[in-house]
Length: 110
Image (cartoon, rainbow, N blue to C red; front, side, top):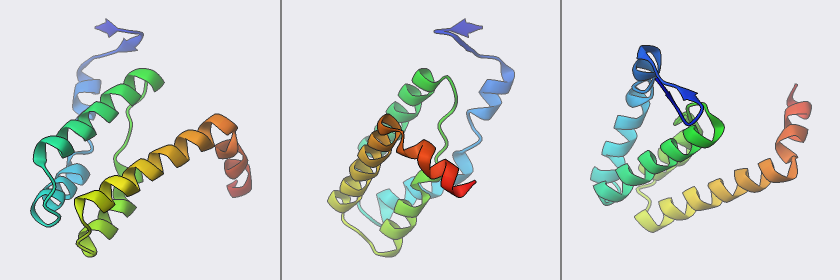
């Protein structure tokens, strides 16, 4: 099935569950250890994954948020601190992508 220029088949359906092993422990920890609202966490993850997947026409992995998650859980950060880190990280990567900084960093790392 095609939708908005993306192909959806059994492989896509199977791949949609690929990040659950990474996502579930972080979500459970955010909710139980850091006291975050479950609706906010799940809606935020879902909305960002759907929007970025539709825009880039590729799945968006959870892995970039592992560092924030590990630090937040280990340090028992407040929900406000976690959201601040997430917003800052998102803005940083958006600006880096729009200005071409990501391409420059890729050339340095290669």
